[in-house]
Amino acid sequence: MSMHFGPRDAPPSWFEPAERIPQPRRPALTARPEPSRIAEWGSATCDKIVGGIRGGLWRFTEGVADVLFPGLGPTVGAARRSTKWGPSLVGLNDGRDADVKIGLVGSENLGLWTIFRTRLGQSDLGPRPVWCTDLATVPLGTEGINTEATAITGIEDVKPTDVGRLLLAPPSADARTRLLLRVDVRRRSGIVAVDAGDGVWQRRLFFTVVHPARRGDGHHETYRVVCPVCGRRRLAQFRGFDVCSDCGWLLTQT
Ligand SMILES: [Zn+2]
Image 1 (spheres, helix red, strand yellow):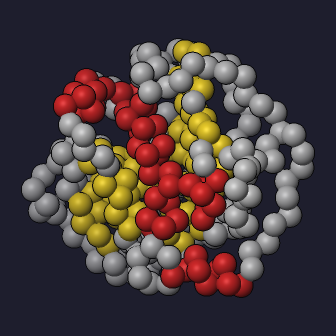
Image 2: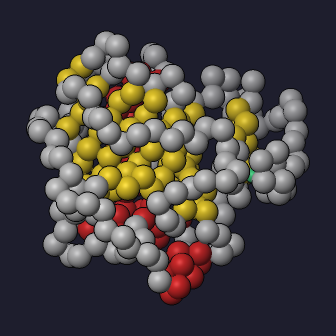
Image 3: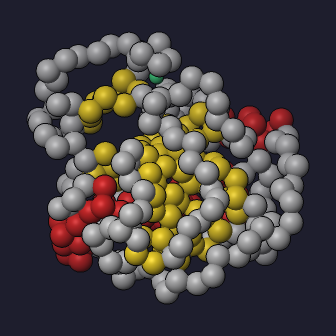
């Protein structure tokens, strides 16, 4: 993974040495999903769709945690060293035949979560939670530590099978697939894009990182029943925040 790193932090050990970022080698494929693939996507769990990038998403979250939440770095580092524990992946709308998948990757112990939203197809327009941020995938900016950085980007090579479910058409078994993760530092929100092996970044997932400052015992000072974005009534409660299990709308408890 090469890393364009933000202020206040040296690249963690899991970042491989920086290397040149390849430029697009040929135009995007005009892949369209087959009906069977749409049905397959709808009935699949979050783990089936996103499980292959769970590790990459969490490593990135850990790597940027101290930039997004100054002071959190040592706690994250200690947790990483002291256990063999891996992050949980929670699919919030599993089993509902949904064309948008909403889930979280994170740690209850750390109180650090990455909430994600992904949809089959390259665009995810229409009503969305405000944290969905249409970050561009290019330019990547200069490599190394930049104290003025407003965004942090990580890139890593991944297996075709790890990202195949995120794409309209599965890549070939020998495709040189890559993952790009980019977060807007101020908004603490970002995107995951996939290179299916043709050098073109396809934005495939939105995410936002939360670390509720005051993590209570689950009691709510305000209690909402209806999601203001999608109008449905399936808000999932976590320690310090609520998230709509249908669209990803987020309410951090204060
Ligand atoms: Zn909603």
